[in-house]
Length: 421
Image (tube, rainbow, N blue to C red; front, side, top):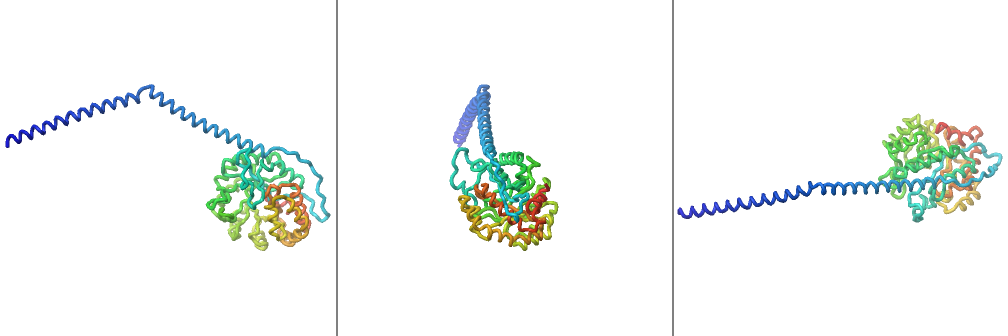
Protein backbone atom coordinates (compact mmCIF):
# COMPACT_ATOMS: atom_id res chain seq x y z
CA UNK A 1 0.00 0.00 0.00
CA UNK A 2 2.90 2.31 0.82
CA UNK A 3 4.49 1.62 -2.60
CA UNK A 4 1.25 2.60 -4.36
CA UNK A 5 1.17 5.97 -2.56
CA UNK A 6 4.81 6.64 -3.58
CA UNK A 7 4.00 5.89 -7.21
CA UNK A 8 1.01 8.24 -7.16
CA UNK A 9 3.13 11.02 -5.64
CA UNK A 10 5.87 10.60 -8.29
CA UNK A 11 3.20 10.64 -11.10
CA UNK A 12 1.67 13.90 -9.83
CA UNK A 13 5.11 15.45 -9.51
CA UNK A 14 5.95 14.59 -13.10
CA UNK A 15 2.67 16.11 -14.33
CA UNK A 16 3.41 19.34 -12.47
CA UNK A 17 6.95 19.58 -13.87
CA UNK A 18 5.75 18.85 -17.41
CA UNK A 19 2.98 21.45 -17.09
CA UNK A 20 5.47 24.04 -15.84
CA UNK A 21 7.69 23.62 -18.93
CA UNK A 22 4.69 23.88 -21.32
CA UNK A 23 3.50 27.09 -19.61
CA UNK A 24 7.03 28.59 -19.74
CA UNK A 25 7.43 27.86 -23.45
CA UNK A 26 4.05 29.46 -24.18
CA UNK A 27 5.07 32.68 -22.44
CA UNK A 28 8.34 32.80 -24.34
CA UNK A 29 6.66 32.26 -27.69
CA UNK A 30 4.02 34.88 -26.95
CA UNK A 31 6.67 37.35 -25.91
CA UNK A 32 8.57 36.78 -29.17
CA UNK A 33 5.36 37.33 -31.19
CA UNK A 34 4.49 40.37 -29.17
CA UNK A 35 7.94 41.85 -29.65
CA UNK A 36 7.75 41.21 -33.39
CA UNK A 37 4.30 42.72 -33.60
CA UNK A 38 5.27 45.79 -31.62
CA UNK A 39 8.53 46.25 -33.50
CA UNK A 40 6.75 46.05 -36.88
CA UNK A 41 4.08 48.56 -36.11
CA UNK A 42 6.33 50.96 -34.29
CA UNK A 43 8.98 50.92 -36.96
CA UNK A 44 9.24 54.50 -38.32
CA UNK A 45 9.35 53.43 -41.98
CA UNK A 46 6.18 51.42 -41.57
CA UNK A 47 4.45 54.34 -39.84
CA UNK A 48 5.46 56.61 -42.69
CA UNK A 49 4.19 54.11 -45.25
CA UNK A 50 0.82 53.94 -43.53
CA UNK A 51 0.61 57.74 -43.27
CA UNK A 52 1.45 58.15 -46.96
CA UNK A 53 -1.16 55.59 -47.97
CA UNK A 54 -3.79 57.37 -45.89
CA UNK A 55 -2.83 60.75 -47.35
CA UNK A 56 -2.94 59.39 -50.91
CA UNK A 57 -6.40 57.93 -50.26
CA UNK A 58 -7.71 61.24 -48.92
CA UNK A 59 -6.20 63.16 -51.84
CA UNK A 60 -7.76 60.78 -54.35
CA UNK A 61 -11.16 61.13 -52.72
CA UNK A 62 -10.79 64.92 -52.66
CA UNK A 63 -9.73 64.95 -56.31
CA UNK A 64 -12.74 62.86 -57.29
CA UNK A 65 -15.11 65.10 -55.33
CA UNK A 66 -13.55 68.25 -56.78
CA UNK A 67 -13.77 66.90 -60.32
CA UNK A 68 -17.39 65.89 -59.77
CA UNK A 69 -18.15 69.38 -58.40
CA UNK A 70 -16.40 71.08 -61.33
CA UNK A 71 -18.13 68.82 -63.88
CA UNK A 72 -21.55 69.55 -62.36
CA UNK A 73 -20.86 73.28 -62.27
CA UNK A 74 -19.72 73.28 -65.89
CA UNK A 75 -22.78 71.25 -66.88
CA UNK A 76 -25.26 73.62 -65.23
CA UNK A 77 -23.32 76.65 -66.48
CA UNK A 78 -23.73 75.45 -70.05
CA UNK A 79 -27.43 74.75 -69.47
CA UNK A 80 -27.91 78.26 -68.06
CA UNK A 81 -26.25 79.93 -71.04
CA UNK A 82 -28.23 77.83 -73.52
CA UNK A 83 -31.48 78.85 -71.82
CA UNK A 84 -30.57 82.54 -71.88
CA UNK A 85 -29.00 82.64 -75.34
CA UNK A 86 -30.11 85.60 -77.44
CA UNK A 87 -32.10 85.23 -80.63
CA UNK A 88 -33.12 87.89 -83.10
CA UNK A 89 -36.54 89.41 -82.47
CA UNK A 90 -38.13 91.45 -85.20
CA UNK A 91 -40.61 94.06 -84.03
CA UNK A 92 -43.75 93.30 -85.98
CA UNK A 93 -46.62 95.68 -86.69
CA UNK A 94 -49.29 95.71 -84.00
CA UNK A 95 -52.41 93.69 -84.57
CA UNK A 96 -55.46 95.56 -85.79
CA UNK A 97 -58.71 94.97 -83.89
CA UNK A 98 -62.36 95.87 -84.47
CA UNK A 99 -63.71 98.92 -82.64
CA UNK A 100 -65.59 96.79 -80.09
CA UNK A 101 -62.40 95.01 -78.89
CA UNK A 102 -60.50 96.11 -75.82
CA UNK A 103 -57.20 97.65 -76.99
CA UNK A 104 -55.54 98.80 -73.76
CA UNK A 105 -52.74 97.21 -71.68
CA UNK A 106 -53.11 93.47 -71.11
CA UNK A 107 -51.55 91.06 -68.59
CA UNK A 108 -51.59 87.29 -68.99
CA UNK A 109 -52.00 86.08 -65.40
CA UNK A 110 -51.22 82.44 -66.18
CA UNK A 111 -47.97 81.75 -68.02
CA UNK A 112 -45.96 78.58 -67.34
CA UNK A 113 -42.25 78.82 -68.10
CA UNK A 114 -40.42 75.55 -68.88
CA UNK A 115 -37.45 74.28 -66.88
CA UNK A 116 -34.06 73.33 -68.28
CA UNK A 117 -33.47 69.61 -68.97
CA UNK A 118 -31.09 67.44 -66.94
CA UNK A 119 -29.96 64.90 -69.53
CA UNK A 120 -26.35 65.05 -70.87
CA UNK A 121 -25.70 67.96 -73.23
CA UNK A 122 -25.38 66.81 -76.82
CA UNK A 123 -27.37 63.64 -76.27
CA UNK A 124 -30.76 63.12 -77.86
CA UNK A 125 -33.21 62.25 -75.05
CA UNK A 126 -35.53 59.29 -75.31
CA UNK A 127 -38.98 59.91 -76.75
CA UNK A 128 -40.66 59.56 -73.35
CA UNK A 129 -38.69 62.57 -72.03
CA UNK A 130 -40.04 64.71 -74.87
CA UNK A 131 -43.70 63.91 -74.17
CA UNK A 132 -45.56 66.29 -71.88
CA UNK A 133 -48.26 65.66 -69.31
CA UNK A 134 -50.99 65.60 -71.97
CA UNK A 135 -48.88 63.65 -74.50
CA UNK A 136 -47.90 66.74 -76.51
CA UNK A 137 -44.32 67.81 -77.35
CA UNK A 138 -42.78 68.98 -74.04
CA UNK A 139 -40.96 72.32 -73.85
CA UNK A 140 -37.43 72.44 -72.37
CA UNK A 141 -35.62 75.70 -71.88
CA UNK A 142 -32.33 75.80 -73.77
CA UNK A 143 -33.24 72.70 -75.77
CA UNK A 144 -36.24 73.54 -77.95
CA UNK A 145 -37.13 77.02 -76.63
CA UNK A 146 -35.18 79.96 -75.19
CA UNK A 147 -36.19 82.76 -72.82
CA UNK A 148 -35.41 85.28 -75.56
CA UNK A 149 -37.93 83.54 -77.86
CA UNK A 150 -40.63 83.57 -75.19
CA UNK A 151 -39.92 87.26 -74.53
CA UNK A 152 -40.13 87.98 -78.24
CA UNK A 153 -43.55 86.33 -78.46
CA UNK A 154 -44.80 88.37 -75.49
CA UNK A 155 -43.44 91.58 -77.00
CA UNK A 156 -45.18 91.03 -80.34
CA UNK A 157 -48.44 89.61 -78.99
CA UNK A 158 -48.92 92.77 -76.94
CA UNK A 159 -48.97 91.62 -73.30
CA UNK A 160 -46.84 92.78 -70.38
CA UNK A 161 -46.06 92.00 -66.71
CA UNK A 162 -47.39 88.47 -67.22
CA UNK A 163 -47.61 86.19 -64.18
CA UNK A 164 -44.71 83.87 -65.04
CA UNK A 165 -44.62 80.62 -63.09
CA UNK A 166 -40.87 79.93 -62.83
CA UNK A 167 -40.18 76.31 -61.77
CA UNK A 168 -37.64 75.66 -58.99
CA UNK A 169 -37.00 72.11 -57.73
CA UNK A 170 -35.39 70.78 -54.55
CA UNK A 171 -32.47 69.19 -56.40
CA UNK A 172 -29.04 70.06 -57.85
CA UNK A 173 -30.89 71.95 -60.57
CA UNK A 174 -32.28 74.49 -58.07
CA UNK A 175 -29.35 76.95 -58.12
CA UNK A 176 -29.20 76.93 -61.91
CA UNK A 177 -32.91 77.67 -62.23
CA UNK A 178 -32.78 80.49 -59.69
CA UNK A 179 -29.94 82.12 -61.59
CA UNK A 180 -31.88 81.86 -64.85
CA UNK A 181 -34.96 83.51 -63.35
CA UNK A 182 -32.90 86.24 -61.73
CA UNK A 183 -31.17 87.09 -65.00
CA UNK A 184 -34.48 86.83 -66.89
CA UNK A 185 -36.12 89.41 -64.65
CA UNK A 186 -33.15 91.75 -64.99
CA UNK A 187 -33.29 91.50 -68.77
CA UNK A 188 -37.07 91.42 -69.33
CA UNK A 189 -38.70 93.19 -66.36
CA UNK A 190 -41.45 94.64 -68.54
CA UNK A 191 -42.68 91.23 -69.73
CA UNK A 192 -42.79 89.09 -66.56
CA UNK A 193 -44.04 89.18 -62.98
CA UNK A 194 -42.12 86.41 -61.25
CA UNK A 195 -43.80 83.60 -59.30
CA UNK A 196 -41.79 80.76 -57.77
CA UNK A 197 -43.40 77.48 -58.78
CA UNK A 198 -41.64 75.26 -56.24
CA UNK A 199 -43.23 71.94 -57.13
CA UNK A 200 -42.48 68.93 -54.96
CA UNK A 201 -42.22 65.27 -55.91
CA UNK A 202 -45.77 65.25 -57.29
CA UNK A 203 -45.20 62.28 -59.60
CA UNK A 204 -44.78 60.05 -56.53
CA UNK A 205 -47.76 58.73 -54.57
CA UNK A 206 -45.94 59.64 -51.33
CA UNK A 207 -44.84 63.01 -52.67
CA UNK A 208 -46.41 66.46 -52.42
CA UNK A 209 -47.34 69.14 -54.97
CA UNK A 210 -44.98 71.61 -53.29
CA UNK A 211 -41.72 71.68 -51.37
CA UNK A 212 -41.99 72.24 -47.61
CA UNK A 213 -41.67 75.62 -45.92
CA UNK A 214 -38.03 75.15 -44.93
CA UNK A 215 -36.99 74.34 -48.48
CA UNK A 216 -39.07 77.18 -49.91
CA UNK A 217 -37.49 79.63 -47.50
CA UNK A 218 -33.99 78.50 -48.49
CA UNK A 219 -34.86 79.09 -52.16
CA UNK A 220 -36.25 82.54 -51.49
CA UNK A 221 -33.41 83.51 -49.15
CA UNK A 222 -30.89 83.37 -52.00
CA UNK A 223 -32.86 85.96 -54.00
CA UNK A 224 -35.05 87.73 -51.42
CA UNK A 225 -36.48 90.37 -53.77
CA UNK A 226 -36.78 88.28 -56.93
CA UNK A 227 -40.28 86.86 -56.61
CA UNK A 228 -43.68 88.51 -56.29
CA UNK A 229 -45.70 85.34 -55.87
CA UNK A 230 -45.75 81.66 -54.94
CA UNK A 231 -47.38 79.29 -57.42
CA UNK A 232 -49.04 78.00 -59.41
CA UNK A 233 -49.39 75.05 -57.04
CA UNK A 234 -51.92 72.40 -58.02
CA UNK A 235 -53.66 71.06 -54.92
CA UNK A 236 -55.62 68.41 -56.82
CA UNK A 237 -54.82 64.70 -56.85
CA UNK A 238 -52.34 63.82 -59.60
CA UNK A 239 -53.24 61.30 -62.24
CA UNK A 240 -51.34 58.07 -62.94
CA UNK A 241 -50.27 57.35 -59.37
CA UNK A 242 -48.94 60.80 -58.52
CA UNK A 243 -49.29 62.71 -55.26
CA UNK A 244 -52.57 62.92 -53.41
CA UNK A 245 -54.56 66.14 -53.07
CA UNK A 246 -53.30 68.66 -50.52
CA UNK A 247 -55.80 70.69 -48.53
CA UNK A 248 -55.30 74.48 -48.49
CA UNK A 249 -55.49 74.38 -44.67
CA UNK A 250 -53.00 71.51 -44.25
CA UNK A 251 -50.14 72.06 -41.81
CA UNK A 252 -47.69 71.95 -44.69
CA UNK A 253 -49.33 74.91 -46.40
CA UNK A 254 -49.99 76.78 -43.16
CA UNK A 255 -46.24 76.72 -42.55
CA UNK A 256 -45.72 77.98 -46.09
CA UNK A 257 -48.10 80.92 -45.55
CA UNK A 258 -45.74 82.15 -42.82
CA UNK A 259 -42.86 82.10 -45.32
CA UNK A 260 -44.99 83.75 -48.01
CA UNK A 261 -45.94 86.52 -45.62
CA UNK A 262 -42.30 87.17 -44.77
CA UNK A 263 -41.47 87.79 -48.43
CA UNK A 264 -44.74 89.62 -49.21
CA UNK A 265 -45.81 87.14 -51.89
CA UNK A 266 -49.17 86.47 -53.49
CA UNK A 267 -50.34 82.84 -53.74
CA UNK A 268 -51.67 81.10 -56.86
CA UNK A 269 -53.51 77.77 -56.48
CA UNK A 270 -55.32 75.29 -58.65
CA UNK A 271 -57.79 73.90 -56.13
CA UNK A 272 -58.74 70.25 -55.84
CA UNK A 273 -62.17 68.69 -55.50
CA UNK A 274 -64.11 69.51 -52.34
CA UNK A 275 -61.69 72.19 -51.08
CA UNK A 276 -64.02 75.18 -51.00
CA UNK A 277 -64.52 75.27 -47.22
CA UNK A 278 -60.84 74.71 -46.45
CA UNK A 279 -59.88 77.45 -48.90
CA UNK A 280 -62.32 79.91 -47.33
CA UNK A 281 -60.88 79.14 -43.91
CA UNK A 282 -57.40 79.99 -45.21
CA UNK A 283 -58.67 83.21 -46.81
CA UNK A 284 -60.18 84.29 -43.48
CA UNK A 285 -57.07 83.39 -41.48
CA UNK A 286 -54.72 85.22 -43.85
CA UNK A 287 -56.43 88.47 -44.86
CA UNK A 288 -53.07 90.13 -45.57
CA UNK A 289 -52.18 87.60 -48.29
CA UNK A 290 -53.71 87.82 -51.77
CA UNK A 291 -54.81 84.45 -53.16
CA UNK A 292 -55.57 83.69 -56.81
CA UNK A 293 -57.00 80.39 -57.99
CA UNK A 294 -58.33 78.84 -61.17
CA UNK A 295 -59.74 75.54 -62.37
CA UNK A 296 -63.10 73.95 -62.97
CA UNK A 297 -63.45 72.23 -59.58
CA UNK A 298 -65.99 74.87 -58.45
CA UNK A 299 -69.10 76.14 -60.18
CA UNK A 300 -69.40 79.80 -61.15
CA UNK A 301 -71.91 80.22 -58.34
CA UNK A 302 -69.41 78.79 -55.81
CA UNK A 303 -66.68 81.03 -57.21
CA UNK A 304 -68.86 84.10 -56.78
CA UNK A 305 -69.75 83.02 -53.26
CA UNK A 306 -66.06 82.98 -52.30
CA UNK A 307 -65.37 86.32 -53.96
CA UNK A 308 -68.34 87.94 -52.20
CA UNK A 309 -67.01 87.02 -48.75
CA UNK A 310 -63.25 87.40 -49.19
CA UNK A 311 -61.70 90.57 -50.66
CA UNK A 312 -58.27 88.90 -50.75
CA UNK A 313 -59.53 86.23 -53.19
CA UNK A 314 -59.16 86.49 -56.98
CA UNK A 315 -60.17 84.16 -59.77
CA UNK A 316 -58.35 83.55 -63.05
CA UNK A 317 -60.56 83.19 -66.14
CA UNK A 318 -58.76 81.12 -68.77
CA UNK A 319 -61.18 78.39 -69.86
CA UNK A 320 -61.87 79.70 -73.37
CA UNK A 321 -62.56 76.33 -74.98
CA UNK A 322 -66.20 76.70 -75.97
CA UNK A 323 -67.18 73.75 -73.74
CA UNK A 324 -65.32 71.56 -76.22
CA UNK A 325 -62.95 69.03 -74.62
CA UNK A 326 -61.47 68.04 -77.97
CA UNK A 327 -60.54 71.66 -78.67
CA UNK A 328 -58.91 71.93 -75.23
CA UNK A 329 -56.88 68.78 -75.94
CA UNK A 330 -55.65 70.29 -79.20
CA UNK A 331 -54.09 73.14 -77.22
CA UNK A 332 -52.40 70.99 -74.59
CA UNK A 333 -51.46 67.92 -76.63
CA UNK A 334 -51.51 68.70 -80.34
CA UNK A 335 -48.42 67.78 -82.33
CA UNK A 336 -48.30 71.20 -84.00
CA UNK A 337 -50.02 74.57 -83.78
CA UNK A 338 -51.66 74.26 -87.19
CA UNK A 339 -54.72 72.21 -86.30
CA UNK A 340 -55.34 74.23 -83.13
CA UNK A 341 -55.20 77.56 -84.99
CA UNK A 342 -57.42 76.19 -87.74
CA UNK A 343 -60.08 75.13 -85.22
CA UNK A 344 -59.82 78.40 -83.26
CA UNK A 345 -60.23 80.56 -86.33
CA UNK A 346 -63.12 78.48 -87.64
CA UNK A 347 -64.98 78.41 -84.29
CA UNK A 348 -63.89 81.83 -83.01
CA UNK A 349 -67.36 83.33 -82.60
CA UNK A 350 -68.80 80.21 -80.97
CA UNK A 351 -65.94 80.00 -78.46
CA UNK A 352 -66.22 83.73 -77.71
CA UNK A 353 -69.98 83.49 -77.14
CA UNK A 354 -69.52 80.66 -74.64
CA UNK A 355 -66.94 82.73 -72.74
CA UNK A 356 -69.19 85.78 -72.66
CA UNK A 357 -72.26 83.78 -71.58
CA UNK A 358 -70.29 81.98 -68.85
CA UNK A 359 -68.31 84.86 -67.35
CA UNK A 360 -69.58 88.32 -68.35
CA UNK A 361 -72.04 88.86 -65.51
CA UNK A 362 -69.88 87.21 -62.86
CA UNK A 363 -66.98 89.50 -63.79
CA UNK A 364 -69.20 92.57 -63.78
CA UNK A 365 -70.56 91.66 -60.33
CA UNK A 366 -66.99 91.30 -58.98
CA UNK A 367 -64.99 93.69 -61.17
CA UNK A 368 -62.05 93.94 -58.75
CA UNK A 369 -61.46 90.20 -58.32
CA UNK A 370 -61.02 88.65 -61.77
CA UNK A 371 -57.91 88.33 -63.91
CA UNK A 372 -57.41 86.87 -67.38
CA UNK A 373 -54.85 84.25 -68.42
CA UNK A 374 -54.00 81.80 -71.19
CA UNK A 375 -52.55 78.90 -69.13
CA UNK A 376 -49.97 78.03 -71.77
CA UNK A 377 -46.92 75.84 -71.43
CA UNK A 378 -48.12 72.26 -71.92
CA UNK A 379 -46.55 72.03 -75.40
CA UNK A 380 -43.56 73.82 -76.89
CA UNK A 381 -45.61 75.48 -79.63
CA UNK A 382 -47.80 77.17 -76.98
CA UNK A 383 -45.05 79.85 -76.99
CA UNK A 384 -45.35 80.44 -80.73
CA UNK A 385 -46.21 84.00 -81.76
CA UNK A 386 -49.14 82.97 -83.96
CA UNK A 387 -50.66 81.12 -81.00
CA UNK A 388 -50.02 84.04 -78.63
CA UNK A 389 -51.60 86.53 -80.98
CA UNK A 390 -54.64 84.30 -81.53
CA UNK A 391 -55.17 83.95 -77.76
CA UNK A 392 -54.74 87.69 -77.25
CA UNK A 393 -57.26 88.40 -79.99
CA UNK A 394 -59.79 86.16 -78.24
CA UNK A 395 -59.11 87.82 -74.88
CA UNK A 396 -59.51 91.34 -76.28
CA UNK A 397 -62.80 90.36 -77.90
CA UNK A 398 -64.05 88.94 -74.58
CA UNK A 399 -62.92 91.93 -72.48
CA UNK A 400 -64.46 94.26 -75.07
CA UNK A 401 -67.85 92.67 -74.37
CA UNK A 402 -67.72 93.77 -70.73
CA UNK A 403 -68.92 97.01 -69.20
CA UNK A 404 -66.30 99.66 -70.13
CA UNK A 405 -65.76 100.46 -66.44
CA UNK A 406 -64.70 96.87 -65.82
CA UNK A 407 -62.43 96.25 -68.79
CA UNK A 408 -59.12 97.68 -67.54
CA UNK A 409 -59.50 95.96 -64.19
CA UNK A 410 -59.65 92.42 -65.53
CA UNK A 411 -57.19 93.27 -68.30
CA UNK A 412 -54.32 94.34 -66.02
CA UNK A 413 -55.21 96.48 -63.00
CA UNK A 414 -56.38 93.60 -60.80
CA UNK A 415 -53.18 91.72 -61.61
CA UNK A 416 -51.14 94.73 -60.50
CA UNK A 417 -53.15 94.93 -57.29
CA UNK A 418 -52.58 91.24 -56.49
CA UNK A 419 -48.78 91.63 -56.47
CA UNK A 420 -48.90 95.20 -55.19
CA UNK A 421 -47.25 96.79 -58.20
